[in-house]
Image (cartoon, rainbow, N blue to C red):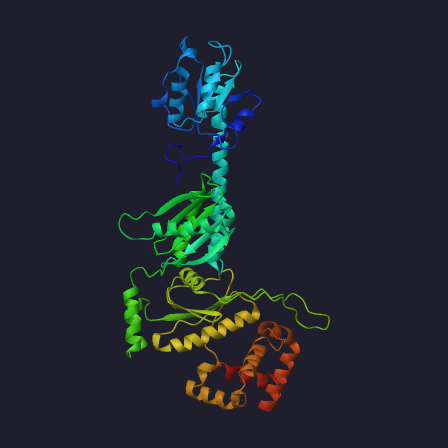
Length: 506
């Protein structure tokens, strides 16, 4: 964590003060370089300024306290060593009215103890130096606040992606200019991003993550270490995970940025069950032992009506144009199937922990009083709100809505709730009619899906080809095969209506 001996603000490089032409400062002894930084300016004529320093100061003096015999004794050694012991960053010596030059013995003592010594010319008052330090500190603080704010916004945006955990890790690594890793509850590295450090630093970071893993009331929530020129930091997530960060340098705002990422990762990796995990476990056990959906639904706390949501990562296919012969063009940029972390994040956004990742689709059980909204990166189909004993029907409705949403490139599509033709026919009779009509296609699921998509897109060959990720000639061949097996003419709108009705009963 930040050094407690200096204020938690960006330091001012001593070189920045030396570069100010209006001050005309000149370093005459001690180390120089970017590592020399100033956190404040303080004026003192005390022979022992130790009690009045917090650390990181540019101490300004005109040498009023220096006795006449100082050059022949240990005075300057004692004086400089006390400044160094107090954590002073540098010593500024003002010329006139007491001393015309900087005492040689003082410069030699600063060289011995490694304290930068700066000559302040007579025309530069100490207040001007202090004001310059304050101005540079304010500029640095503003820049750091801007950096932290931009990092917070980018991390929040990353958490909204379909792959939120890897996206947050990548964004954090970019903002800190290093490497980030997420460790599971067992200590296994499960995701990482950024420029990988050496093997030694990597092992040390994994060990540091174990330090913050909950093991008792005294377990720290964060820990830092430095090894081989690499700064290491580990942060505990309340879900049992741990975040590790390795950077070549440590800036004032890095801890704040990493803390924001820690909060987001905690939300993304948590089960979000808010104390109701026992009730959900009980519901599962009762179902396995023969309980009915109506009996276990109250344990889930979602009321007497539920919606089913089917969500899949949005496709990035290029559907803007057609090839020279009218064939659909598509770029091979389909997103990978969502993993458990992405599914958990999706459930958190929708307001439910009842999630089921199935292949390329995430199914979410949602209480009827929660209205899902379109989410960037997802294509979503939503069922009607139905009682527990009709959840299987709701699942079918959500699947159909999701398929149509993908075909029409709509972010979110709800199953129609208005009464239709199906309401005029008893469900058992409608299903029997559908089975009989579609029996020739029963052993050809690809033909059935192609026919469904083709009808939903009003007979468009190109859009059907894009929706199914096949060539438009393949669509034509399949539709011709359907017409042959069904023994009907698919150009007839009455035939299409009957087939669409039958497909809706499956």
